[in-house]
Image (cartoon, helix red, strand yellow):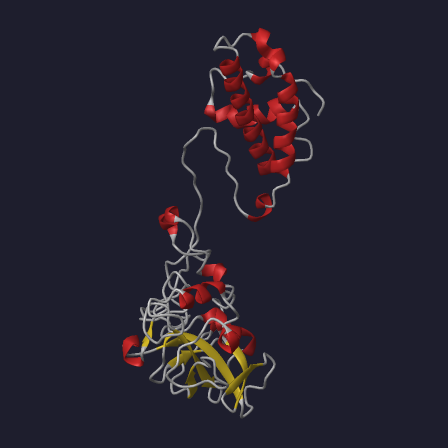
Amino acid sequence: MSKAFTLNHLTEGIKDRNNSQEGARLVEKWTRTGLLRGLESTKRDNMARLLENQAAQVLREVNSLGGGGGSTSSSGDIRGFANIAFPIVRRVFGGLVANELVSIQPMSLPSGLLFYLDYTYGTNVGGDTNLQTGASAVAQTYTAGKSIYNNPTGKGIRSGSLGVGGQYDLVGTSYSQVHQKQVGIQLWASGAFHGGNTITTGFAAFATGTDGKLLGFDPQITNLIEANSGGAGATTGDGVFSFAVLKTTGITSMDPTQVKDLSLFSATSASTLGLAAIGDTIQGGSNLLNVRRLNQLGTYVGGVFTPNPLVDLTAGTAAILTVVSGVFSGTPSASPST
């Protein structure tokens, strides 16, 4: 990497560009410098493009410093900088963790078009539908046409990723499993600790204390509670959340390792239950009443829920804690994954 860069080297191939051959040409050009050593496939192509972008920038600066003459006689003025700039590009970009996590598409111009492939769910699953038919339904754990990656779907991503939905929900592993609709599940308790010692009916959750702990101090839900238009912990406003503790009696066929895929829905309007459907900015699915990623398996004794992922579902104290938007005033149906 000690090779000296000249103006002639930097301008190689810049004129008479052929887009169909440019990628291979750039790789061949910069391979000769040794800066692409150790890189393969897409990483190598991306690095070649970035180095070419840096070369174009160096040339612009040469023209600016040289009064626009652009003669080769000014090449000596940039050698010191060029011999540092290009290895820096190679070292910094080559070591970015983003190369391992997301798709990187270097651009050859200040603006351009970026393309990507978005996969979507093919059928409605969970909620009041089923895996076998994918029939039209009101509420779904996985909604046909929604991205398996995150919300929003397709071209909607141009407004920015919401970081929820699909695999971002961290609960999207049971799409291909059998989902069952089950009604008549007993609502054991609803409300929040709200600074008290037990879950009390009619209260909304705070973002701190025992409420915050049961919320897992989820940053998104915490922010919504604290920014609630009615005040943190109030039962009115746009950031009201509470707990619903469900008795596991009657849902013993559920796979306990998939508790986060249990979805609550109602055949009637959610507002009649004092609740609101969880929106696309919080999770995937449609018209669900609970934040699935916050579902917890445990025991409920004396008004206190204690998380225990290994609890026997047939035990008399076994329960599932869910987080709902609003304050419960009714009994839901549930869709456990089995």
